[in-house]
Image (cartoon, rainbow, N blue to C red):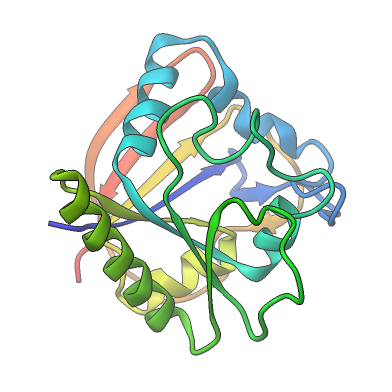
Length: 205
């Protein structure tokens, strides 16, 4: 079964970037502390990175995040999605207009201009095709940014919400939640490491 999993790092005060994020500073001021866990040597952090990338059949992201990861200080062989782990999944970008060119053309990019539902549906199709090829159940990961994840949650598209709670207070930046649909989630698991608390919630449809 292909699940739709929203997966994002967040500060103690609810931000997914620090203040003043931009093309050359995608995580904003102080925001690099959000992702310390993803590059740590803690065995549990490494397990979470490995298992997430192993289960990624397709990944959804918004246009702003795409511009950052495809920008001059974005992903490369050492710092891309699942770098150093398994093969790269398909990437689906929610955007109003596809870019004129793509720097990271070695990755599998699809641009969807017809809304978050269609972006997630496209990613589900790609993940199911990857599952059939590999013989394993693969999932769709919605990696951000904050608006893309909150929009998918509000639309009832998410099965699981995974938050990587970093021990940082940013004091501003991009919030994950700014209103939206009220709902009660079901806590599924909590893993504490030396760098973060990883919390997984089931999301009622």
